[in-house]
Length: 130
Image (cartoon, rainbow, N blue to C red; front, side):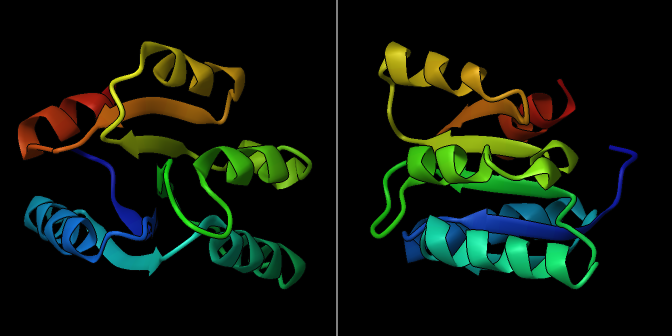
């Protein structure tokens, strides 16, 4: 893996998953700052704030589907209204194996791939590089 990720967002409300996922990211050695948001609303507010203040966007966002307040799909729908969405690389992460839900992400060109939970480091790298 030859890319360095200065800023990474994890948007997920499951503290156990977030802890384990942060360990995977840490082991890969290319993810510098990882920030977790418990719902899409908090992450969207952070992105809007970064845009308004001309601050760097995250290099990558890992987005869960099922969360309180603003779930993954609602987050994508809200984000679609902003031009800066095209500067983002988002990966959906979910334990859902519903093929309709998995295909749904393709409506959003700024979503790069769908990663199924649980995540192994090897599978994760393949998805990230494809």
